[in-house]
Image 1 (cartoon, helix red, strand yellow):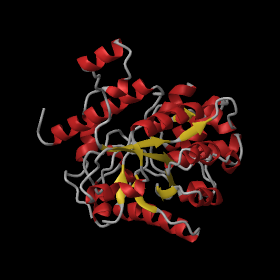
Image 2: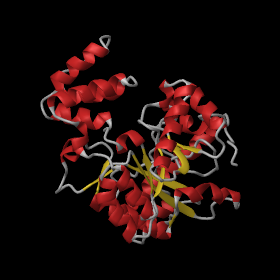
Image 3: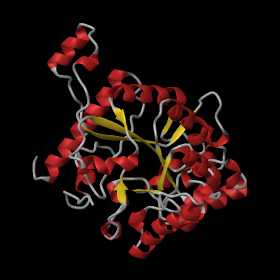
Length: 358
């Protein structure tokens, strides 16, 4: 079992408090670029595990209904393919389940990358899978049982509502359940507020009620993979892992509900005869989205690894603070190298901070 080397929330919380880092390339790299020499001759990612977090992979010319309105965290199939090719040229791909074992053998001797997806969106099978299969990459998808049986992430529903003329109806519904907040009638502002003023269960129930009333059944969107579609990815070599049963933020729960959210998801997929890789992606994935009750649960679950989505590179082992980051819009080798350098620098700065450095 890997033991945490740092106090709870040490790395992730420090990562989020590090000011944005703008790196100036070293003189020898700038000289090489000026002389048009290959950048990889001068710079390579240091040894470590670079876990990439993705959500939605889209074909911009053939979007489904929900993909036309919900653009958060998306990447086009073209950019996704370029990112995979460049990463594969610089690093060694690795399944998520193999990550803890690297340190049991002395630590990574080279840079490795891992591809992960959150929320089990339907385009993971339709569009992402053919690309990773062609490249021999084994990704992990973090799934929620409630999404597999028809529910839809409330932010997808809210995005459709505000972009199809139902912002006023949504604002009124939210005003009824959370009257202390002044809900905007401006569609974009209201959409931002649905995250900023999130309240567990109240938000999901209000958004789904408005969507069902004015748009139709949420399951008709087919935004998330069904159980059979997840099973298909599992047969194709994908690792399936835990994202809780209903994607509620764990910091808002007591220990009993934290335990239920995680264990009931395990049981759901066991009934579907799908085994989950022992990693738990904390919903939303920031330091503020976990808390003491999650800490207590993780301490009692030594075989389960917790993973964030707020940036950082895994340069040290952990039991409950594995780090992930997004490459965002990067698609050239230089852009990806710069993104990797920034994440390494942020991670190192975080370790300096939690050790009392300035």
